[in-house]
Length: 235
Image (cartoon, rainbow, N blue to C red):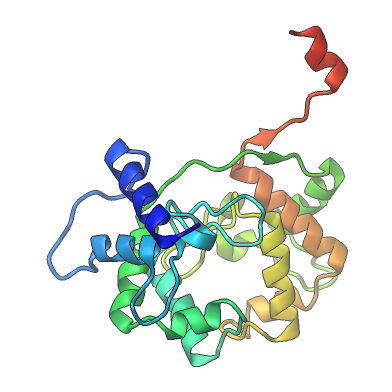
C-alpha cells in the first residue's frame, strides 16, 4: 500500500471517529501526538517507513501475528523498545534500521500516538483448548519444580500488564509471543537479562506455544468456523 493511500486512510479513520484514544486531552510539553500520527501514516523524511504498513494505523496490526499489537502499550515501553533497537540491545532485521532512522523526537511522538489508541481486538481462530489450558497454568502458577515463575507475577492478572514498564500480553498475537520468547532464548533480546531471558530459556517449544495460545485468546474475540452443512441449513 502506498504512503498516499495510508495517509488518506488515516484521515478517514480520524475524521470518522474510528480511532479511539485512551486519553483525549493535550498538555503543553508532552509529545506531539499529531506528529506521531503523521509518522505512523507516512513515515519520515529520514527513511523510516510508515508504521501503519506493519502495525496498522490503529496499532492492532493485521491479525497474522507477524507483527505485534502495539496500541495501548505505554509510551515508556514503546519508546524504550525503539531505543533498544537503536543501541543494539534488541536486534531485529526489520525494526533495527527503522528505529535508527527515527530521531529522539520521532520516537517519543510516535510512541505517544500508539500508546493512546484503544482499537477493538481482532477476531481470531480459536486455539487448541488443551494447549490453552497448559498455557493458563504456566501463566497463573508457573512451575515450582522447574523454577519457572508465573507470567502473572510481572505481567499482571490475565496479562493486563504493569505499566509503564511491563507490557500487556492479553490479546497479543500468539505467533508474536512465541517468536519473541525464542528471541529471548537466542539472545536477540537482551533488555531483560535477569527476568525474561531467564524464564524464556527454561521453556520448551510446547510450553512456548501453550502460553502464547493462552494469552492470545484472553482478549481476542474468537472466530468460530461454521461447518458448510450447518451454514447451508440456516440459509
